[in-house]
Image (cartoon, rainbow, N blue to C red; front, top):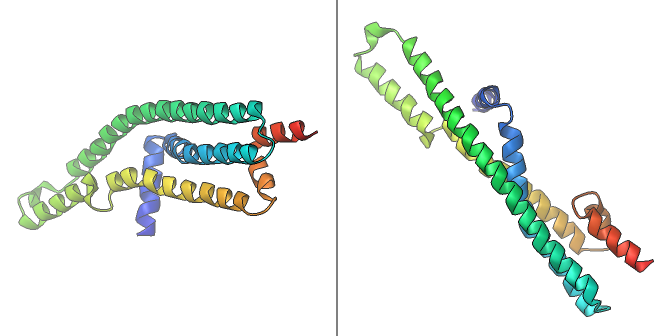
Amino acid sequence: MTKQLIRACKIIHQENPRYFAGVTAQQFMTAIRPANVLFFSARVINELSGARNTNAIMLYAALAVGLSFLFSAVSSVIAKRMKVSDNAMHFNFYALKSAAFCEMDYIHAENPKTQETLHDLAAKMNSSGNGLMAVHWNLPRLIGGILGSVISLFLLAGMFGNAGHVTFRQGLFYLCNEIDIKKAQ
């Protein structure tokens, strides 16, 4: 099974070298949007419970909305590009299937066992098994789940203790932490 998965990933990469990068970027943008809103909502709540600086509250609210829009726009652009490349890749998958069919021994084409094997291959190719199409369609969900879990762990680490700022400083939220540090000085 692992060998088949690796082979399928190699074929997908061969057909579209930017597929994995595009899927990862799109899933990252999808996973980071809720984290963005949670992060800035926590900042607003901290500001409301502390100094109640309206400028900081407006800044956090504007950054939450602006970054959410930016992440949505980038995700949408990536999704459109991925859809175009998916259509081309599907054509190539069917071309691979046609090439394999042309290499078949035609003496046995009418054999019921051969027909059954061809139907099984068609079913696996059309996302009901573990063919190329199934790997192609399930990979974004897998990557999205992994990225969502990692981002959730970063948020969870930031909730407990003061070390959370160090964690977020390494990522996307570096800008916001720098704004807070400069305000404190």
